[in-house]
Amino acid sequence: MFHDYPYTDFHELNLDDWIAKIKVHTEQIADIYKKLEEPEQQWDLLQAEIDAMQVEIDKLKAGDYLDVFIPQILQAIDEALPEMIGRIMNLFIFGLTKEGYFTAMYPDNLDNIQFDTIADPGSDLYGHLVLEF
Image (cartoon, rainbow, N blue to C red; front, side):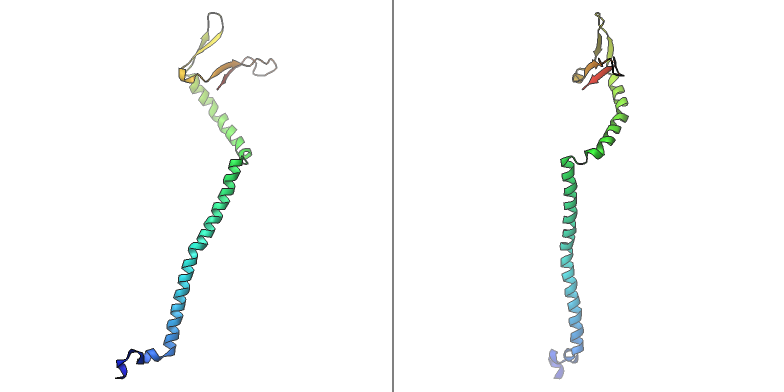
């Protein structure tokens, strides 16, 4: 009859067993709280990174990085320009008119290119052909 009631079992009456179970459950609850806080902490880190990126984006929008990139852009243009002009020049036929004027024939889709010459006698490029587009 002593074992007919579950709360009269010896282990149920042992306080050490109850304390051990409470400690285990307390640790489990602490782990759960920690896991619940981690996403919030990660969100805070992510938000800090987003804020830092926004500062950089705002600098780009304001043009603060142009001074850094202009030399690189100019260098890239200087390196690519001879090949680009060479490819364009293959599309042109140059000659002289009956009146002795310089002329160039080119496809219609290149109408935005204008020809000129350097007319400043003090310039090292005096008399050179200039393509403006």
